[in-house]
Image (cartoon, rainbow, N blue to C red; front, side, top):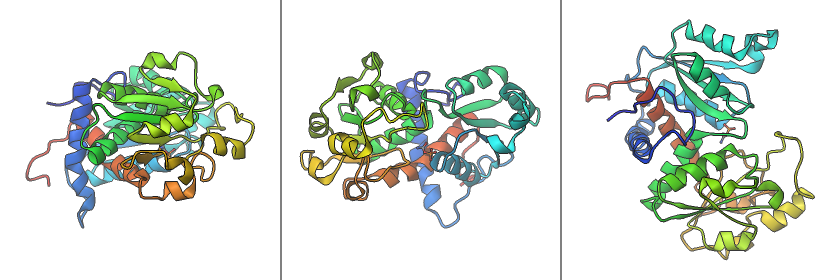
Length: 312
Ligand code: CP
């Protein structure tokens, strides 16, 4: 079975079967990154454009590495190096890129809905690498893969997502992704950082950090995104850390087999202490490793690579 869609834009438009297909494909492609020669010819002759209009370390690099591991050619374009600075519209930019016949356009943008708009205007496959506060589907997929690998399942797990839920596209995509796969999502954080009616996405809300920590199989901490609507929405970082941050003392109330996650970038000492971020329960760097595998799977599934014994 393949993916029947042209684009990967959000978790709403993927069903559980498609999510499992992406995770299974990522699982099978992961070992390529563990080889001495980390490259297979699966997507030889394919071209991937990375259009990043927002800063990124993990997502941009791992999409680029994923393309190269599958032998696709990748081209990177940032906001400052594209002709949007001269007044060209994003739609014109996308149409001009399409005229060069790429197979996939990966786009990150600060405005929600930009990847969806571009996907409607071009016949090239579009992958959303994060749009405003809306969606970050490849992050959610790598988070699902990381938990599935560590726990052996997703169904029935309790996932606590703690922090700046309002401004987090990762939280939105993960509420949808984890609940679709049968996990239970609990959100915690200051009331100013939890949007009204977020429960409609299928999550429960608590304002009690201790409760969220104690009941969780997985705790995902989120950074406060002051770059979006430039305000802290809390008195100060020190107080935030005391009430909502994850530190060793608070972690004592957690389950013995709890897993600690964070999509990055981490603000050490604010939402998570360095001891916890680097400690034995942390799978933060496993998330990053799986980011390459998941993005290889997405390219493979949308760019129509043929995979057989000769490829590998
Ligand atoms: N998780 C994530 O999107 O990180 P980057 O902003 O570094 O890509």
